[in-house]
Image (tube, rainbow, N blue to C red; front, side, top):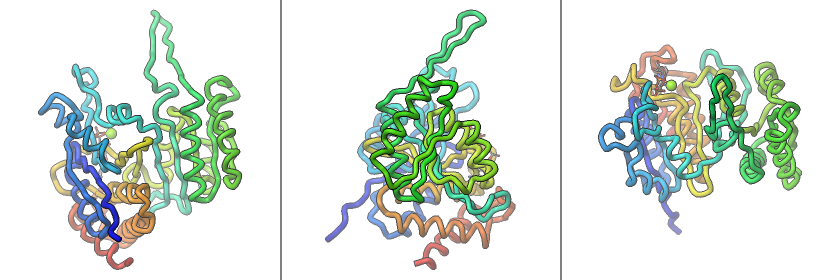
Length: 339
Ligand code: ATP
Ligand code: MG
């Protein structure tokens, strides 16, 4: 029986996205999986060419795909004031209702990485304080924080399912002692959803205590779930524990499709030179394969990246001399030998 091919959209985007996504495509082709990959355009350069950061054609492609791998999107300073401009990823998240933002944090064999850390942040990506409803009355400013039972329940379910596949521990992070109505509703709903997952050990922890514990004892965490703002802050803190944002992958997941992107930006300072580190994009591609149900290949990519990070060659950002192509060759070589 032949397997149905997965339809994948590749959006390099801006800056080094144009270098790291084609590198990931090479690695993905190496997997031998039935992947039907198509390139599409989006980002700041696209906006300047056609007046839209995400052309309709790209939106339709992404909608029709099983998954999308994106490189990086620039929002140059001042661009938020350019009439008609909306950052590509924000537009896609909203239009496609990609409500779950997943950021795994894992120890890597690089300087500055703590050992034995392996956790996953599941962040609610559509509400909380990020509904962007702010008002100002003279010297008083007010921001709305919106929490719904429905959105809390669906994000909790994503986190519980992830916990089920991992070490079966879920921390629900909140501030219900001070904000019992908003973050309290989130907490109550998540704990209620957890009742259907008795094999997952679910516990709650107040966000400030969680910040402290993440720094002092990150090994004790498995999956974390929280509201938008707390998730934003804590996921960067988590990346800092394992050597920074340089190798961090992320996923934006909705009911129908998902977009995967490395956490780093478009790195305009090194763009076009062929020296960008594609490791984060490789780990992002692995996350995408895992989402598609190809867990074994995803693990193999993860291990191949770790092998090269440990043994070299390394790219300049990690103190080495390899360019994008040499690093990619080495990861492909390592991937082959892990067969
Ligand atoms: P953007 O506006 O797209 O967010 P930025 O100017 O904030 O871009 P980042 O991409 O966030 O830049 O990167 C910050 C620093 O890290 C830059 O010096 C950049 O060169 C470096 N950097 C980021 N990603 C990579 C990478 N994949 N390989 C090598 N260096 C990187
Ligand atoms: Mg940036």
